[in-house]
Image (cartoon, rainbow, N blue to C red):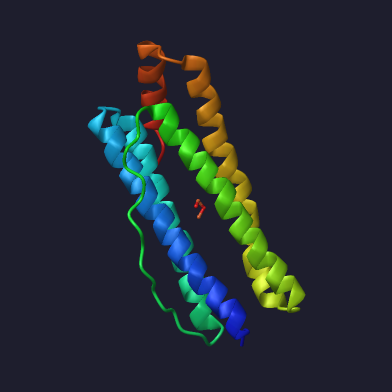
Length: 162
Ligand code: OFO
């Protein structure tokens, strides 16, 4: 059993993870449209990861005797002007998700909900990786600036993600 408040917050987080999936899929579409197929592949894999994040919460709620109530997912931003803007926006998005996960962890601690705390630990660690991977790409893009060769090399590199 978990509290109704925790169940509500986890349902909200499922919506946010699915929104992340939607956002990254939109970014993949933009990158594909710009002929950066490697970056589009990287972002599509990222979108799939977000789906799996949502599904882990989904299963957890049932394991704890609560129901999933799916919510509306808004349209993500789609008017990107550059590859750098895409990755900067994604990095900013991940900082927000980290705050969401930290809030969930704070609630679990406040409620002495040790099972949720243990479960959420995975997400706390995952957010460190999520922030780092976007931040790294932003920093590379800032170095590359408008170099066509640099962008092509990065595209090739990111296309290796499995
Ligand atoms: Fe689910 O970590 Fe990104 O948003």
